[in-house]
Length: 311
Image (cartoon, rainbow, N blue to C red; front, side):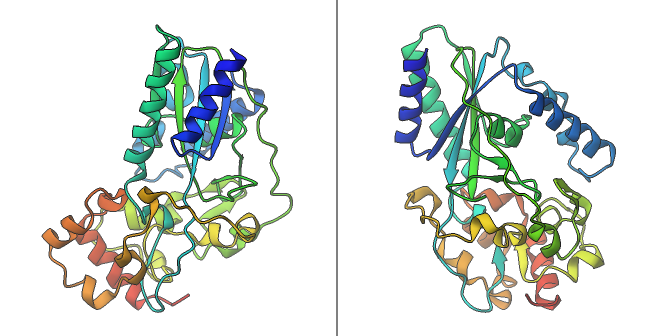
């Protein structure tokens, strides 16, 4: 199976994935620790309104694919060397291009079909972060990178600007060694968060998180503490990643056409955007991961960000 694993990785890279690793379905002791950490996180209520985080399949991946033997983790670097226009509102980098769920899912399905052609009878399932899988822990297990104190996966080659996906399969493939954590004593992400959402290393409280409130919070108004601390963010937040030392070194800018930013993301002006109708928002957000934010929520976020303390 070694030859198959090597060829599988080559095929994944041809599909645009710059990072590929394999984990055994049995997992290591660290995966068990990550699962226990999820239990504590849920018990503390850090998931806020994200009830789907408690899906029991997230703690038992084999429930997603009976007979699973291996997990193929893939990474799609999404760093683009582009700057927002001065004075524009801020949108998280992952939302700049096409909806990454569709992009990664389509490529993983192509990889699954290729694997099935090589080994007829093998079953597989493609998973992006919308699937109830402990995705960052499995990516760490497969050697793509380690989970940082901001809870994002960090790669030595790509920093934390790495979109991840997984192909679960009944094929038994040789596993790669898990990634070795390298955050050390650094607390840059914890110190930089304006709402103290990173309540302790590796623990993000969604109830205090700008990304959660701008994307998932359906209330008519944002909590006062969040609204006052947006620093221009209206869709997600990259503050903890922007300050991460692993993102400070020169990183290659992706040329993947599916990840290139729509120009208006880089020059989003409050007065203009507040005048867009629901239909205009609908058109602008076609095939975007940020379509999850409804027009009324965009207006709420923009109004709050326009009056909050600038970065």
